[in-house]
Image (cartoon, rainbow, N blue to C red; front, top):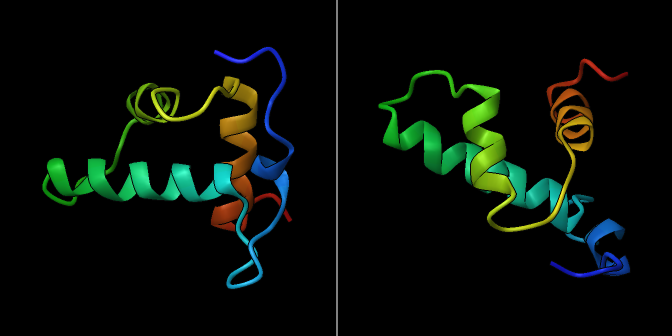
Length: 73
């Protein structure tokens, strides 16, 4: 793992406004949901998949999930 996060991880993409970290969460969520036959994905399972791609704390994952679900407004 890197000592300092890449600043590009936090910049929103001009196409849809998602950061790289948000995109990783969404892709992992989608793939895991397909594997589970469309069922809900436990947060712990999702976190395990996400940290394989990018270094992130549990609090940051929960913050991203709240923001993407509309509950963080």
